[in-house]
Amino acid sequence: MKRPALFALTLALLAACHGNPENNAACGFTSMAVASRLVQSLQDLSHVVNTPPAEVPAVLPGKVVAHGTSPVAASRTPAGLTLRYSGDAFPQLPGFGVLLVDDSTEAVRGVMIFEPDPPKGWPKLGTIESGGTSLPLYGMRVHWADLNAPRCPMFQPLDSSATKP
Image (tube, rainbow, N blue to C red; front, side):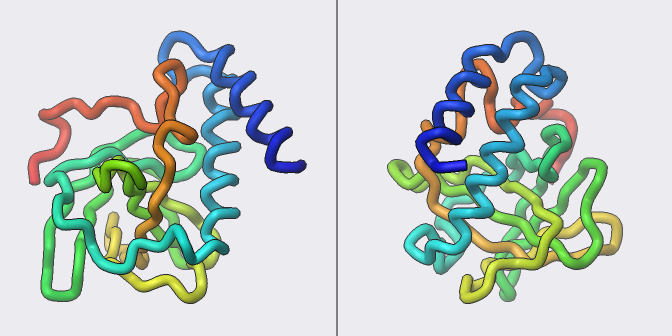
């Protein structure tokens, strides 16, 4: 599918979203389309984040592709960022996490977790871990307004009591 057609499909699905987006079929399809766009963008090294952002929230939203939002606790170690995912469906190897950084504000928006092999040529920012499995963590600058919409947000708001760093 060509990019303009994919973008039009994404916008049409966004318009259909209502209620809890993570329980809504139209928003689910939109989420999958966005995840596909992210994977395609991994081939473009201009999106790469070379070093961990200066400001990473202690708890941020995370999502395994095709699953709901879960809290992710972040900490810094000498080896880079260590993220601890608290949700279901964490992949075994292969797999990887992508820290999403807004290209206009440099704000960290969350982390997406994918099951295929990691991208080649991207610098590792650290790891994302869950249940004894540790996957590499990379960073990508994204135009947040293209990925996130009020009616179908990329990540649901986190319950502040769900994870304590």
